[in-house]
Length: 124
Figure 1: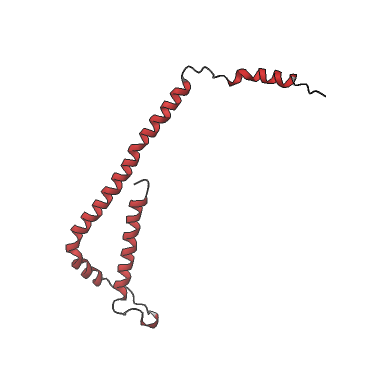
Figure 2: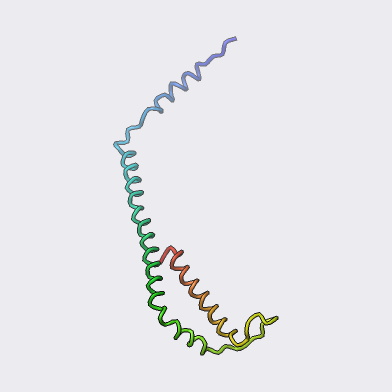
């Protein structure tokens, strides 16, 4: 028994023209060129991010150098702030320095929050 493949042959013959390249008047080449130009245009954005991080790090170092001589004044200023006393269980902290320790802890959290938003924020 022989199988008739005339329908398959006709179908293959019909689809054979579809595998030929389609004339697009250079449209595909233009799309590839624009895609390549777009990827090259994204490189300055990466450089801008690196420059932003470098500038923020330099600003942090300079701010530290300028603020270092004034740390004694900041310490006396923080020591002059009086917060309500609270009792710490099992004498964890010295009760006389509890308020200043709380202020220092809040200041540290604030500085870390602001610094991390500048370093890790995308829209700064």
